[in-house]
Length: 340
Length: 238
Image (tube, rainbow over all chains, first blue to last red; front, side):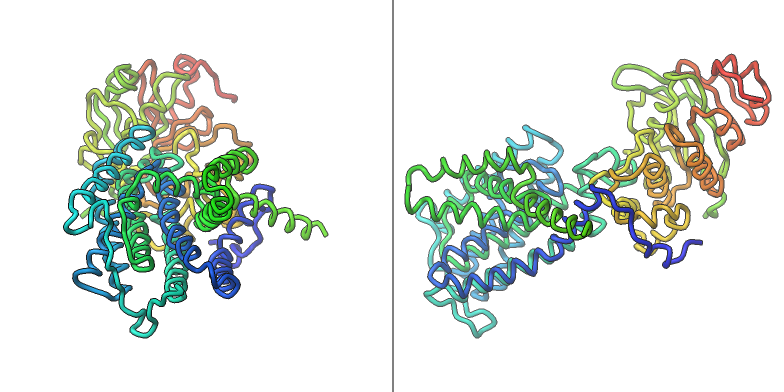
């Protein structure tokens, strides 16, 4: 009988193993780093808290996309459907019924999750290009529903008048955006912790197995479609919370929150940062929106061209995204330390 | 309710199956009692792997029945058959390369607690040593151990093994066969190493062109050089 002591033996080291260990190590410290950098930005960039808050809520949305694409292999250009559903649900709830920001996030999460579960059960039998088209169609339908229900959503004028209550009854959402920023940072960090637990759970591992080979998962007793629908629903909750967070921190919800371009931009951000890593979503969002902010100020008409060039460079030279570059760098440093 | 040792009787009758409209198996029948070990032998391309793939629902079944402890599995999905008790280790070794050894094993737990992983490490201590390595970083033998261990974690009553020794060094083959011989469950083994398969099994079924051409005790088949020559084109070393 093998004892626990046997298992504490060091693992065999191979170059691939070093890379995997590096990735896992970065994954572990990624969340504290996000929290620390986020707090540092609060002190260092007090005049840009509005932009930083948008980056945080967008990062949460891109994180939801990473769950479906990076861990489930679900190609989608309709993730904004869940984001928008969450944003409108939280906004409508804030205008009509509740003001507590945590309750509004919960409303957004439930709305996003329900839309994802309902649509995922219908469309996730498809794969590849067909699935991509179906996800776009779902987002278009949600956008049109939001447009037509103008009594509730404000239609093309957008939904305004969202005035959340102070966080925990103490911290008012001030005009400088301090509370919004710290609230968004806290929500993102909690979301990263939860997402990390999910992707490392047996359910998350099975989803990664489905991404690699659905047939193998069936052979060991799992239902690939059920796993994917459940993952889509979970990611829908994340996207809905991101939508709710945007509604709470910005005070307005527009039709663009359900738009195709928002889904596409999120995909670009994720590819830039690196899929299947969680923190890649944060890196990619910060890079995309940071570059957008800087370049759009100097050249408001051609900034997208720079983003395009940047994306081509990343795809050609760092196919795993910016995060993979960080991993390689850390791996190199560790390798040198080991050799020394 | 049957006890663990009394479950796992497999009956296959007049099984006709293939890939799409192409028929590979044309009326295959055999039975394995609970706890029995059957070797499924034949030349290349006669339908051995297709038989196992059909049992777990990964081909197109055109007719016949598959009964596990009297329950018909033929109409069930692949995952439902696995849940019913069929464990499958395919020829391709079936390891998730992007997951670590431990993560690969967790996918086979089927709701059992993580402490059950100790069973896998007890059966194959090498997996315990390599548990944080990626599945794609393992040697062929280690991948095979992982594939077998993961299938066993689901507590199957019947284990289907498709050429588990293919491409492995003799010492690893010994290790693997030794571990398999300790298992108390029904096993159907497809294997090119005829002598090892016949030593391992109680009974043997020879296939040719999708049909059963001989069935009988394994030890008798091993002693019958003419039979082996006729159905496999090989003679075992004395």
